[in-house]
Image (cartoon, rainbow, N blue to C red; front, side, top):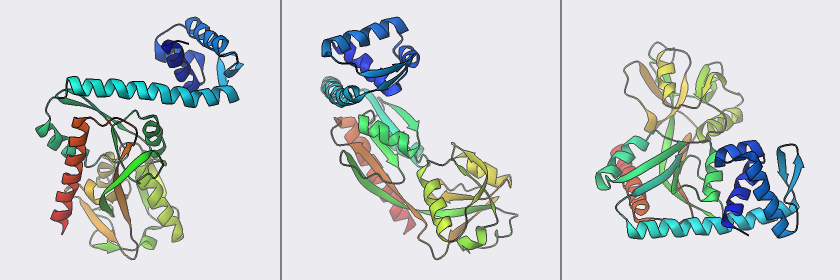
Length: 295
């Protein structure tokens, strides 16, 4: 059994499609298929049920996948640890976020401390982020909502009020507070389902008797303020994502604890480099300073 066979198997098992897996691995389909066949011959059992180029893990394959993921994960952690020990001043932080409003400020503060560390940041839905966490493919996630799981460490770093953003010409623009029921006939702009804040707000609205009507749903939270300003709709905006534009008014929601918890998440088994440890300290300090300013 060869390491290359295991790496190819892992990719095919996750994609369950020979063509897509071959493209991802930059190899030919025939080469990939032969490698998987040799692995199955070595193991003495089939790992997939096949229908054309579409594969589906069978019971053998599912059991084997758990072992392969664990083995390759440990090898990757070994590489990360040696790289960190041999060259601690350089490297790349792998980050994933479901909430990006505070990230530019956090990265700016971290870069002041570690200017030679690079970043790779992905904006993901909650489920996409959980998948990467379980696989140990990211150093940290900045998430709302928090995630509780056996292999995930979760540290709440901030309690963030959710406000209602309306354009200056709106009927509620001269108010500072509003009830949720007053919003039931409004048109909203928001992110797509699957993002933590959207799912949370929808659930709260449903609990008081209405489902928000969205005229725009996207995957770029920063765009929502522009749409509100253009009077396309109103929006639920976390306080940390407020924009000081003159044409926007922000209202608090009365009688409901409309807040989101922002959490820093990491895989308990992933090697945490010295740079990653310092990144965590910057995140905690940043939100600590935000709390002091709001008091």
